[in-house]
Length: 295
Image (tube, rainbow, N blue to C red; front, side, top):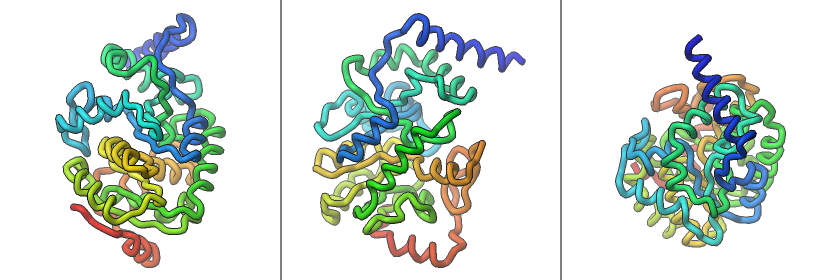
């Protein structure tokens, strides 16, 4: 009962600040507007609570140790102004109406507890985009508009060469229709944990081996934020794509809660561990797509 009261108070206080007092926060575009810009050829570097924790609070994450260089990078990128890079933060910091109760509570509590650090470090003048594009389904009461935008993104990937940079058991797009019509899929595999240790090697290998007609999809925690920024500077379209694949799997399953997936890492549900691909054809396809392992 006490927990429920606490949750109610956090949500209500946040709603009052947003709706009645019209508290001025940040200019954050919607998921729909964000994906429209990606389809126009923009790269994206995304921030969630984990990236903010490393940047502002010097905290480590379950899958990424604290690193002062990474922290500095994340603070730099947050207010950067590259011509073809979208910097994305959660729109849930400014709008919670369509969120499920548990998500309303999480983001209300997060904002109210971290308000001082967020206001100090996030520009009120800059236009940001929505980092929640990778969480388009599970947090929302009605995700219909988000799903329509994801369908457009899937069409955008058609007939494109795709390079995926990911952790060992991420297996982005494997076994579903996210990238089904792409002309080519190749992968660079990094450790599931502490990917930032390898970021320079990844950049060097990619620049030497992949042309700029590849769209780079990066699922590697806070390291993806940095890599998308660096590749954008080099003229690539690079998308810090996060959990989009896992979220898409949940959408296909019509899951009501976060569930584990057979051969993919779902860090919020299960520990990082080696998962066997039981379908031999799928395993062969995956192994053929791996261009390089940087472990």
